Image (cartoon, rainbow, N blue to C red; front, side, top):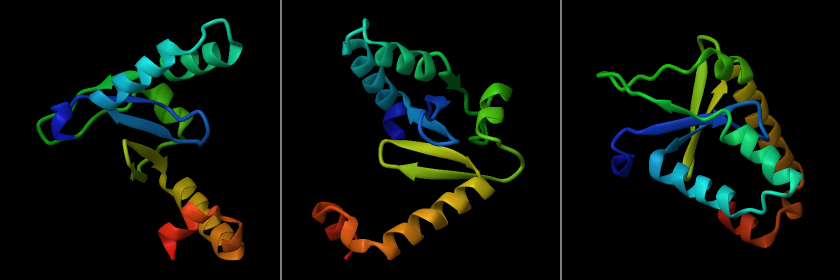
Length: 126
């Protein structure tokens, strides 16, 4: 986050019911990758509309807080209880109940079938 000088971008997550918050340098990498994709492909245009079309600059106040626009809060069903979850190059912002449910489901799936994980993933947890 030090490299981004507090400049953040928030957008919807196209796969999960949450928001993605990127430090500006990471977001610029996403934009570059999207720009390089063939624009005649419907999948490219769809992803650009979702990610770029919903992207908003976040401004941190003096206390390090930020305000999420209402349409993005609605997308992620955010209310008073939220979870900010680190995800390597970004953060995810979840409704607390939704995060607990998906985290429990993910953990149960891994515990139930640990042998189904590819070797490189299994090596991370064993």
